[in-house]
Length: 341
Image 1 (tube, rainbow, N blue to C red):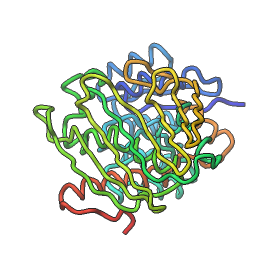
Image 2: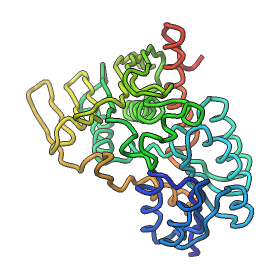
Image 3: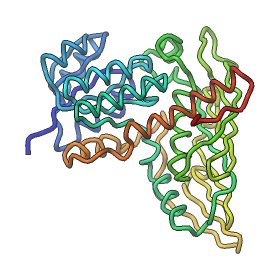
Image 4: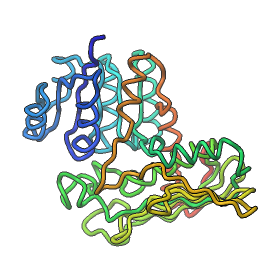
């Protein structure tokens, strides 16, 4: 079988720590191009892994004609790059949030469909072992219906993670559009939709910039959600957890409680009303300090090789993005927002 020819667009930290190493290790992949406006970054990866370096992705698409691309750029560019790549006949794996407006997300889905290519959104939380195990337990029915929940994702912010530190695009409103909500909150809206197999019906949110300086993007959000099923819960995203990173979810159900990521060794804990306690050591959730294979690249390549629609498709990314956009609307209006109206 000929290898899938991949181009990576955007050579910052998410490409460096996740996309590039996972492609490099994949037996069915050849990385043929790296693109970054800071050409030295692209050249560095090209020297390391082969392929050509480009400063302009349009030149790359025309010259290299890759089978597929990873879009690892600032949020504001996700849609235009993904649409152009699809128009060039390339499958697209785009980082989250997939876009910065619902109209952009819709246009990306249409572009992929019109050009008969796959569009996948890198919502890697779904593929992390604790979340996979938790989903299995929920789907088994042992806990009954989910009644209430809380899900949180907080760390000290992108300064230590981003290739540009405190000068990162993450803090520039025109490139990022949104801050902690686009970085972390959208992971959680996606996770809760997927875990509960349910949609967010209504959301109320406080979203603000509490501590980061010289930026207009949000660094904290606290949201209250009501699901279509009637379950209610909270979603928190923060860039100011300066000690004690948190990526945990607790679901209180009819028959007990399911805890994910609350204990360092027992990543999934089930406590039933009858007193039974089950602890599952299934592997950790990635942190900024400790990157684990996300599974996203494997899933993307699998969808291309087998020509099947990715499970984390554009429509899924769009639904998860919409929740976040409605949280911003709630902050602006001071009202609860119905998500699908």
